[in-house]
Image (cartoon, rainbow, N blue to C red; front, top):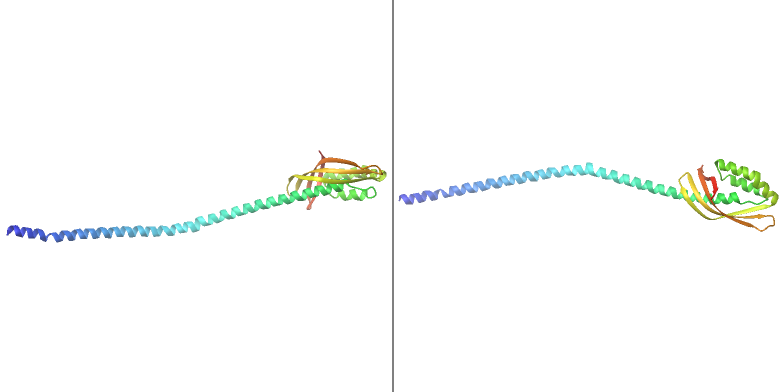
Length: 207
């Protein structure tokens, strides 16, 4: 009997041990859930912070960078177009002015060269006025000299919005009275300045 009672007593203690193990497992599970909940909550709190950093920090900086890039590209495009316009206009002005300077007829030489004078500026204008008044106009009138100039080729050397240098190939045909015409070919470097929206010759140098 004593042995049997010992067995029964030992068996009666087993449920209590099982209950303790179940309780420990439940506590562990609850602790794990709590830790998971805390971790999840912390992640949820971090996400709004990252969103605010993105919206208030990164996006404005990116927008500013894009605006600056667009402004720079627009400035470059405008500068290139202005240079192209200046180049084309100065070349055309150099061609037209050179033809006007070197073309005249004996009966209209004064009017021809006075009109050409309006295409010049600075000291070159003064020198051209003196030369034509003292030499070209009297000689053309007395000897019946006529001249026709053409420009078969022209190239811009440099050009800004107010200053340009152009290289010209010039042919001039000169006729004196009833004599046969004489042809002369030359290269000329023409410097122009933009004055009151007009390209005017400031230097004319044969090369």
